[in-house]
Amino acid sequence: VNVVTRYAIHYSGVSFIIKKQGTVDVHTLKNATIRQNIRKLFGSNVSKELIQIKAESKEFSFSMESWATNANFSTKKSLTFILFINNRLVDSPTIKKMVDGVYREYLPSQSHPFVYLSLNIEPKSVDVNVHPTKREVHFLHEEHIVDEIQTAFEKALTGGNASRVFLTQALITDSTTTKGVAVAGNNNDEDDENGKKQNQDEGSNQIKKRHNSTASSSSSSSSLLSSAPKKRIYEPHKLVRTDSKNPIGRLDAYFRHPELVLRKRRKIAATRSNLTSVKELLTEFSAMCDENIQEILGDNTFVGCVDDTYALLQHKTGLYLTHIPNISKYLFYERALIDFSSMESFAVSPPAPITPLLRMALEKEGGGDMGEECDSIAEKLTKLLLSKSAMLNEYFSIDITGNGELRSLPEIIENYVPPMGALPSFLLKLSLDVNWYEEKPCFRGICDELAAFYKIQPKMYIDHSTTTTTSRGDNVSLKWIIQHTILPAFRTDFHPPNVLQKENCVVKVAALEKLYRIFERC
Image (cartoon, rainbow, N blue to C red; front, side, top):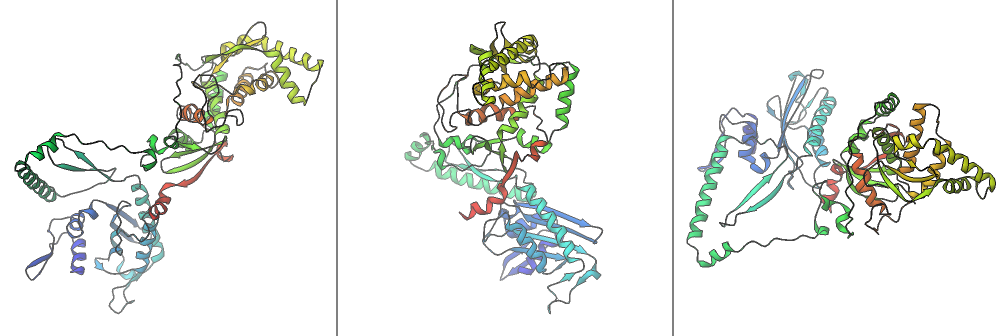
């Protein structure tokens, strides 16, 4: 029976029937496909998880077709491996070992798949004189052919990893019938028409039986129907993450935070500047874009903050450690160019006198009190910024009053206020490090200083595990700032430069598909 079952699968165009003492053990139809025969002989639990795998090579003169279960299916029984070489049922320890090794990366420990594999190679390349029964065979270029088959299996299983099956139940309140609903991703289930019709007939018979039993029940059944089912409430710490976009899967679900209410920001239509120098700066920045990092940051899910510098992000099935300060610096640089001359602003209240702030920064740079020399330099730098105030206000929303007070700063990202402790250093570098005499270097220098000021700066915020205020402009948690202001900006119109890759600012620390085996063992 075991041998005929395997031949019945391979020869799908032939009808096989085995009867033993009047009982039919094997029966396949003549016009059935391989998949339908597997369903008939091994059950629907196997057939619905099958994926088709093909490989061929002209160099080594072989072609391979396989029907194998994906990562959704596993059994504690031994590996069901059906191998045909040139339409003959044989064994190949090399191929069997390869298949078992590939699935070991995806299935729980001591679990096995179902694999049917048909291999066609040159008959003269097959060595059948290996075993007395000629069941075990070897063939020419065996190592290369097995490598090609292994690559095909790995590619198919990796692609099928995005499709997972979950069973749910929909409760029908006007009857006692519950329906099982299967939710799947990309499973290509090719159920034959006869199987569908048979399932529909069986389902209708079951419904009729249940309907009759319901009609003959007592009044207690009616009371059960009229009572609404109780909704079960799950606590977040008892749930398992199955969707990376589900907030339950984030660390926030395990802690209580006060709700933060931010004022609605008045929107303005940001139009890109027509200045040639600004266009060139944007083109130069976009040309350095790293598409791989752009994809990761453009579709990220916040997992949590490691410390004031690093955050964990999930992209598809990968977990990435990201250096937020360095990445945010390039984000603010590009945003300053994109919103050039059309930035929103927020008020500095009360207005900050520039000269004392410059004196403070100079003393910090000089390592102590510089006396009258410091005052003289601070006044000269204040005059320089006053002479450029009209341009700074028009293009960058940096508003400096006539009496030398800073009245507003640009709101480069919505609801984000830079660390004001770095304001003296920003004003000093803005006045000293910018080339004010050439247009393009001037705009580049100002955007560089804005980016260095606005980027996430560790030690400038309160502890990231707490939240203390709800008012805009005051200090909020660093984790909240990263999650709700910086990361959403990463997903929109951001071209991270390839220098981030060289600086190891985005590092993959885990692949979830590789951890399935570990989770299953727990």
